Image 1 (cartoon, protein in one colour):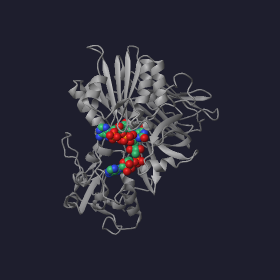
Image 2: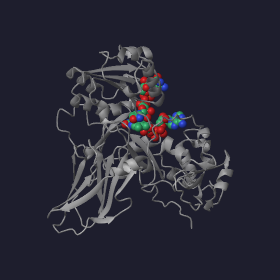
Image 3: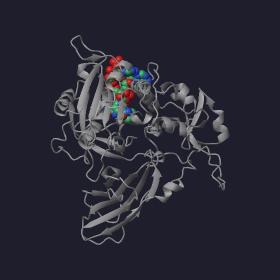
Image 4: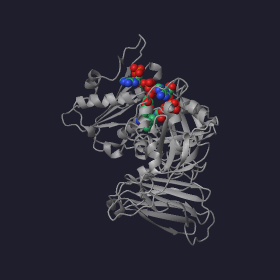
Length: 518
Ligand code: FAD
Ligand code: NAP
């Protein structure tokens, strides 16, 4: 019997994360949308040509299937016949053919690690790569085996291994405290993600590009309100559990998968928990602010500039899309937030009527659930440190990462002299939180906002057009010759790409420009 993925795939170790580089979509033929693909996979048609049989595939066999109409690709040890999928691939046939007859794991990870291929391609599964006996070489120069999983080591390279965190625990009559020594400075509570459900305790401590995982079935029951405390200077993390019964624990629990491991993010799958939709409020004619409540045993704060993945099952397939959490409002610094940040998440989502994910998401009723992943992203708060001028270039929902950045910078960066937001939209009706932005500009002398419309009505007296050199050269200007600046840019991929090119032409360095892409 082959080791074929169970219906519970993706397994915790699988990879579904956003890649750093951008990706262009190609126009698909009529009847070739993702929804059409899902329908085809449910039709009972034999998509592998093997009549439901699963086989062991040798390297020699895989290489033979390298043509458009006979194309096999190996991803993480599993081989798929992707020929039937060619016309449905949003990145185009040529892109898919780059992996024809070979191990496409790395290529796949570069472009869209977060896409749930196990679910999308399960009807195309041919089988598993035949595992070759591995002769361990003395040096690590050997060729990577085709099954793509053999050499994925959980033990990081030496320099990182040296700083691998460790943990300990102690108890009082009513509490159990788990202490994690990360030996890393500048840790904060955003670096600690805790989940407790059905007796299973899972804590992920993010240390730069790695995560330290504690995963255990606790020996006794606990209450669901878990506290995480971080000592920034020493990197000591304390997770405080309240015992349900005041008895003495002899041991913490039974280790579960990957317990006490320290793994690079790129090698890890995303962990999801089910969150409850508790409100949705119109922002514009096609965008809404949704509030999601995390389960009671979860402690998670999304760092500024980072996104999460939302996952829904649509027509039997798991569909995953990234979204960047925002604040409840731009005025949330003025009063206590209605809901604590580590229990509730707000997202502004634009509903595309012809889209796959968003129409379905918008049909969720208050009280329904959606799966939400751990945060991801390459923006670091430290990029804002010592900043004097911050420029935010946003188009459409590309405004979402700017919300927390704007709020954080105004509240925390003491040297900051100016924050300027240039917000590109089609029409006035499309501008997200326009009133709030204008109110903020009135109240906060360091903040300026400019709206640019690509499809204005004749009444519009503001700026119009698309992102361009004349617009940027006027707007993105250092007020002093040596000002420390950061320019954040986010929107449709071509907008962002063009913006980056123009900023380069305006002599801003790479370090001074941060783009949000997937
Ligand atoms: P899709 O099915 O992707 O379709 C979107 C539109 O493109 C539709 O009009 C559709 O008809 C068209 N389309 C689809 N495929 C093709 C094709 N091959 N050729 C031509 N047109 C096509 N969005 C938000 O609203 N809020 C956020 O906070 C947010 N954060 C994000 C963060 C990141 C890091 C990234 C990468 C994206 C973010 N997005 C955000 C966008 C979001 O992830 C989805 O892409 C968006 O919600 C559309 O999803 P969908 O499945 O509904 O639409
Ligand atoms: P939209 O309404 O279609 O467009 C917003 C503005 O951008 C419009 O003025 C539009 O001008 C302009 N624009 C679009 N394409 C352009 C191009 N090729 N060159 C220059 N300007 C262009 O935008 P949207 O539907 O809200 O889409 C927002 C995008 O942001 C999505 O692609 C989403 O994935 C992305 N996003 C990314 C992140 C992230 O973190 N990476 C976060 C949130 C959103 P025209 O009217 O002339 O087209």
